[in-house]
Length: 259
Image (tube, rainbow, N blue to C red; front, side):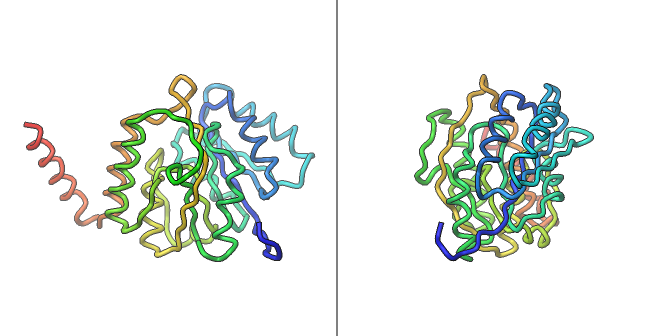
């Protein structure tokens, strides 16, 4: 970190659903990061005791450091997008970063992600898993699916991102005043990307490490989420007047090709 440059306050928003095995370790990693001013945990109606674990964590950790810790529970399961919207409303710091509640993303990356914002080069920074960071070797088709979705998103948004679906999105809190987020579940990623592109915000990508999970270890995203992401890319990038016509045309073309 460069000297003589004031480090802005940082809120970490952590959406949580059934992560009783990992939530305490993730919290500790975030809590021990010197950049962090505020931690916001949003439980999305977990059924495995995660919320009770969060309550215990907060009680134990609150006296130790001068970090604000907030937590809430959605009244019904709303998915990642819904949990993030709840968390963003509680955030008070100058900058927000999204942190998944598993162990795939390491909070040590905050130090790199925040640099373009501190240097006033960016309003939004994406942490890319595909431009240099160390990563666990896992699913080939997940990699291909991510590349396809990022490519389609780039075609419509006119960006040149390498990892639209990354969890690590760090941004100035005041950009949320420029648009309204609507998506639940994993539709958040393409919606957020489409809206920051339309708002003409300054966007950077920084390399990050990635320690992906297997499904046995708790990975939740499926091929259905990929289909939903494609839908959301179209929906949020194409004017509502043309969206359904375009979608109908695509479906007809798809069936004609497969006949």
